[in-house]
Amino acid sequence: MAGFCLAAYLGAAWITADVSPLRPDTPSYLYFDPSRSIGYPLFLWISRQLGGAVLAVPLQMLVLTISLFFLGLAFFKYTGRPVLSVLFQLGLVLSPEMWKFAAMLLTEATATAAVALWCAQLLRTVRAPDSRSIGFLTVISGVATLVKPSLAPLFIGATILVLGQPSWKQRGWALALIAAGLTTTLAVTPIANLFLHGSTDSGSPVARGVLQHTLFCSVSKPPADPDSAFVERYARAVTNYISAAPRAVHADRRHHRSPRHARTRPPPFAPSRRRPDPRGSCSRARWQSGQRTCAVEGARPRRPDGISAVAPSFPVSTTRT
Image (cartoon, rainbow, N blue to C red; front, side):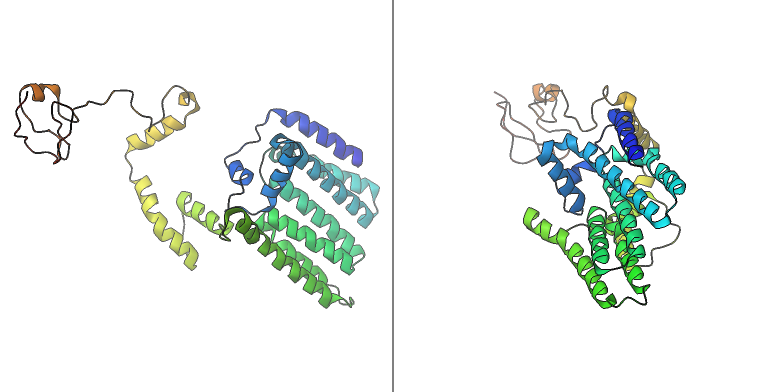
């Protein structure tokens, strides 16, 4: 099984060599954005200290490979069936989508590795439950939650495992250990933000998901909870503006998003190359004819010496020299 995992690692590293590791969410992980949990940014920071950001991809692929190997080994010890264990190991490592995401600087690879380790430790704990096994299971649950906050239900799984052992005398101690691990995990990210940014404020991934769903998804029914209603109320103006925009605006947005025009067409807010008229909005012909009133309301007329008048848009009584 170790040979299968090693071959899968080398093959995945060779196949995904041309895959760009950068994605739109990558900068928020590289620079400890407060909206992200501290787990994966800390992993990237350690990778940069060891050998640069380019080391993060092979390192997280190696961590994923080791985790899958431990899961296959735990499955073999739990079932005692070699053929079934080999097939199970092959099913774990022969996943193209998993390795594709492992080649990107995203949380998917490390989160999958944490879940694989959690499942391996779960099988070991089921075979021989004790406080040490529950402690390792709690630590893995905390690491997985720090990498991806949506994996917090792993603590619930550990709690169900403890409650499902009626003959275990140290159940209370194990439940206290799980509660302490959950509390510590929830406190790590705010404390890290306090040291990094001077504030314990952090963005909620649940709120970010609700905002994205409200802006870009069609909601079939009005939101029931107060948080979703708050986001829906303030995002309604944006959705109405996007839906009511003229067709030319949508066509222009699609034109700018097209890869064919990415390098040939300047950005929509690029500064104009035309030199500004030193007389403001007044044309040369009107100044030569002696008219001193600008055509555009609110424009500031300028004197022949280049000094702008104080009041905007009114006739100037001075004569031209």
